[in-house]
Image (cartoon, rainbow, N blue to C red; front, side, top):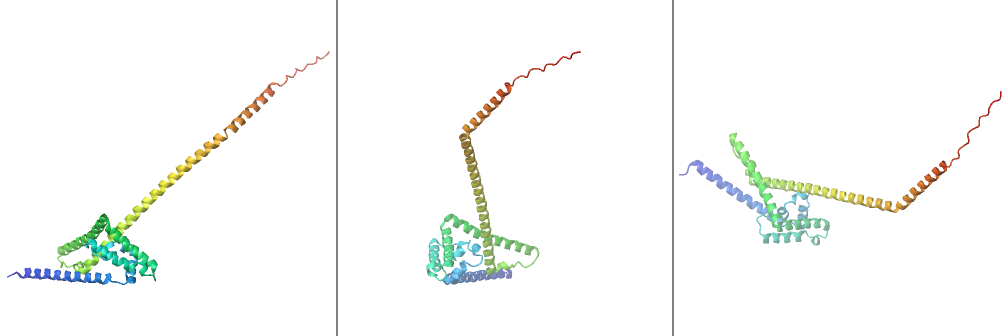
Length: 253
């Protein structure tokens, strides 16, 4: 006969499995429902406030599981791209174009093996972070002698926590990317300004040298004229006539 504690633990474990399967089924139903949203609803979803960050996760954009095969990915892209294509939404072509570009960008990212691996790594990191925080909370509850149930034990709460943490990680990576891009752009601008300054300096030096060469004869002539005038004045000064001494008259007694 099994001990009451063991029986209770087995019952609890079985209950958790059932709860998880129920949650998983509900998630799939939600995904299936969202996957057949109308064109307008899909455009609104892809362009909702904060979409610049929501759409950083291409799996969320395409509404497909990270474990999906390449064929499933291709099929989903075709479905969604047709749904939001500007030709199908001629009453709102500008927003449809933006939504289509978001879908196209997400698909192309997932076609790149390295990019896809990085994206999946971010998703796994988000999940691992939430699981780590759950473990820390339970350790503290155990230390305090309190029941070890936390809100993240609820599958829906856990899913939302993972989703939020994953979005946070994607946002942080995007901010760093933009900062790096801005820094590189600033550096390119600085280098370009230095190149322009160097070119301008070289141009000024060439112009100065050219003017110097062109005016050389004039400067030489001016100097010669100056010397000639100085020589003439000196000769005139040297030709000054001597005055005879004054004769002193004798006085008669």
